[in-house]
Image (cartoon, rainbow over all chains, first blue to last red; front, side):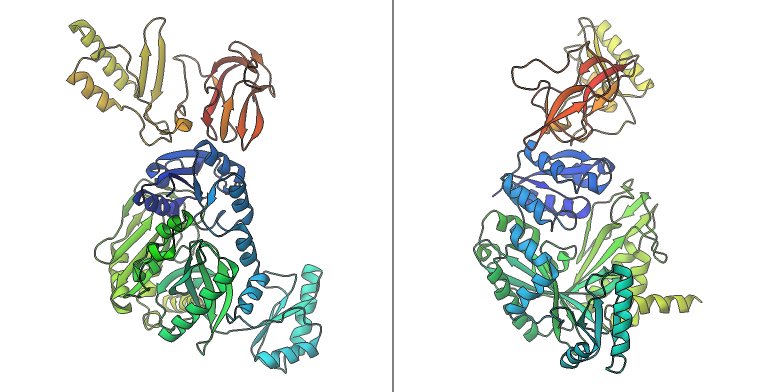
Length: 453
Length: 171
């Protein structure tokens, strides 16, 4: 097992990794920017090294600074957390060259799965269902019509060189396709200098389903079941749960087997998450893979009993999956996580500043992962998440009621938080009934506005 | 410690408290003083140092053998050890701080003479030392012109971003 690990991250995930290390008897080294001097992850690490000024680019994302800190502290391994450098293949390569173990997959695998089209091809070869897309440019309306006919409407036209929603058109019938094709192409040519388009199947009301995996460095892979993360605002997840009410035990088992095989083929190591969209008929399509531990890993931990971060450390130290997770995975009960952000609950404007009161809820089935505390400061330089509130119950009903109770006892003063927003969501009938998709938040916020008017 | 010394020490503690001094070193023989005021940001190390309440308790509980009351540098991380500013009683010197994480060296090579000596006059841009990071020797330049008063870091010492390396009296 490692003697010393450096955590190349900040906030709650840095504290999460430090905690797992402490439980395994591993000495911890924190790195921090000047803005995080009084952070909890700094206070609770065995050693701490300041690596730069507040801006992430000059501190947490500064590879030479992080590696230099790892060298002077003489660490065996680096845990990159999530975000920041966690999916940076170059960083993983520098670690390898510096003889420091990177806790994650090999750089080549990170690179392969990080590139959207290679990831799709890899999954397709392994017979993982992927969202149908034209593997290449659609040259004209004729080809577009043909392709759309084979895949089925609705479809979406997208600019090859594009982004930000430009050069994109959703098409729901063959009659409108030629005109939309030309509009998209012209818009793309004007915006990006390149009018080439490709097409994808479009799902009107998708649900976001993702599967957690663990893989050791001996070729063994296992699936730990799924999470549903459909409650999102502007592509940022707000609420996640495990299991998904939509996934049948058969789907869970079959998809688990297929995923296992695909990752064995590519030589995946350590923790990862495979993301899917589920359409209105319950069919699941691969969209992308995250080659790191995720924010919402906690809900999987609550229902499976597996400590995923300790598993990451043990895998990287060379242990086999069979000793880390001895028995078959059983999903027990239901867990839900609310991401608490330092934002205004209605306007969503960021709310940095000093926290004057911080009462964290507890009790049966309640878990809070946070690096904030009373008199702590939320700096303006980083993402706004300040805590994760996770509730577990014997079923979804109990988990939801527990969450309502816990939210009512989570007192944060001095800054705005999204706690009131979560309270409103948990009182919402559609949410409680499990009737949602990724457009839920848009509809919910509309309803809220109407009710106030 | 005799009664007079004890009384002097008590008066000293009252003086320190009255002036909001959080940490206090003292050595006799030509006098060497180090003072840190309350309200300055705490060093990065897990344990900070003796605080005044603790100091008072210690004074009352048992006589202290030496006249040196030093804040223990309990930090296991050498990198954070000298994060506190060194301020002589009267003047505020300019500190040259490390712009990178790495290992401090006062000379260009082992056995070679130091880049600068105490008492040297330096210009802006003059190389004061090396901080080695990832096998690269980075020359650290002075950001002020003046006299080198103190070398704060020692050769071979790991330093963090922002760590004071030299104290310079600006011209």
